[in-house]
Image 1 (cartoon, rainbow, N blue to C red):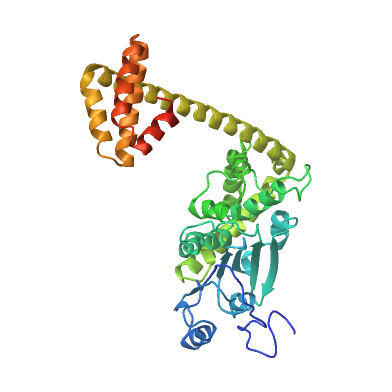
Image 2: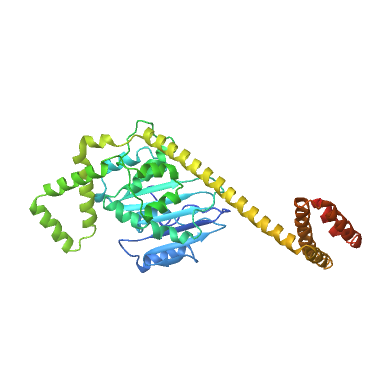
Length: 397
């Protein structure tokens, strides 16, 4: 075997497919170049039930494994790949043009992230994220077909230099203890999450308290980045600016992303020592723990408040019931006996509840003896109804 696929079989076919007993969902998306008829025929050979279009392949499995080789399919045809399973596996592959990715900068984000493998495929770079999770864990979404469309904008953002998705992966390394306290965050926080980033945190189960800590940018970081950006733009020669505009007018692929990526790298370089104001992994851990304690305390207070509200509501309902039983008096006794005569479990339950209310009213009004006399008479008349009598004994009426 040489490279990402077998020489003895077509590259899109996996070497071995074994039977499995779990649910799996796989999806691929081609964003830059649509699939031709020949490619779609090859994909159909992998699955007779898959949903195949010129830009996508999606299939789910319960008792068998996918016959294809995902890495090879991404290397040759697709820009995005998702795989989730009920055994806990979460896989996301993102293919990016190599010319848009600064490997040195990428290494700052992903060097210690053990769930990420970065590999090359001709003119592309593939960020391969795989987290096996815990066996038996539930799928992160009710409808798995919604996941990859929600994540798709991440690719454009990454190509354009918005690497907050990589920051989230770095945050996984912080959360799981793969980084020491002295490690410095690769960005000065990540600011508000957009929809794709929120989907990513949910897919990989990134701790919400760590994410909240990361959202808190260090004081003044936004202003420093904006100021550095203005300096970088102002320093671009007019001839180069004109050339970039011409490339945009010619609809050259990825030119906008290339410009944004270049500016992001230049801004990072221009900030220089100011990056040292970024927080350390230890500071983020401490802040996440503080946020966790605050959240749990707030949750506990809300729980107590809710219990108190329900208790007050139950007390109001009980008082209303007792007032009704007190006003109805003899009529309440007659209604209870009428229900007993229906001779079914639901009627017995209703009658016993009414008798309990009448007992409470009698105790509050100092008329317990009268209640006992009425109850004894009722029991004598219905002594043959064993289920009803048993209910009275259970509730100690």
